[in-house]
Image (cartoon, rainbow, N blue to C red; front, top):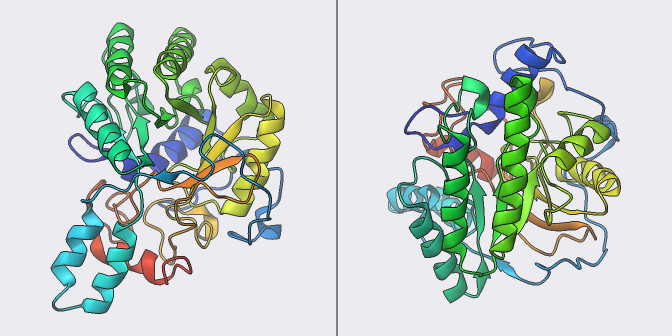
Length: 352
């Protein structure tokens, strides 16, 4: 998912594919950056439009009617400034992208996690908005693959989570807990799996106790089946969390994700969920290519009015435009790729 000193949010999907294919043996890789769908899905992707119109169901969760926090600075904003004089139409698209809320990722590269969280929640509160934060520091993260890293010990992670919680100060904030942390845990030996799920349960309790709405990451609609995902969520403390997150850094369409999310919610006590829509505007590429696939598009704009009764929000967890890695013409993982970002924006019906 990431190499040292590069933003992890750009390459979350790479570990999913690698762990699933190499360690679970549940998928067969065909070409570089291509993987066959894993596990059963409650609805066939061929029968679901990637982003069909949302039904007019009321959104009734705690975020209903609230605005998500959009930081004033972003790579898209800087790109717009670079293009403003020479490419005004492209700069305008980047401006529209930059105006949207993005999640803020925090991990071992955040030297003062309490201060970083506090600065974000304070800025959001001043704007009358709710921030989306990602806690991403679990030990043995990525099982030593593309985004290897995280806290070096279980005790260190517990301390880090408490420092994270200290920055919340009881304010309203959304926290997405450990992308891939539960769904990929079976790459670890049994004892380390037990440790990981204990750490996730502790994090749910600590962050929730500090006032956060905690959504435990649950992979995506094409990774595992509903029953397997439900079991993992329960082990990870999902029964004590506010809900779960789907499709982080993935391309599965919103409609398919909603079908999966509703089915999963029924198996975990009616928990609510979020969907990452940052790059799913046209659904996955053929063959589920995960690494800088061409022809993709930005999906639903971030909102707390989803039109689905159990979906609290559509969020941009991944920053669209950051590379998944040196594949399909991309720069190193985590680096901003302006032309790719522009393609995502130009093909999106949501930014026009």
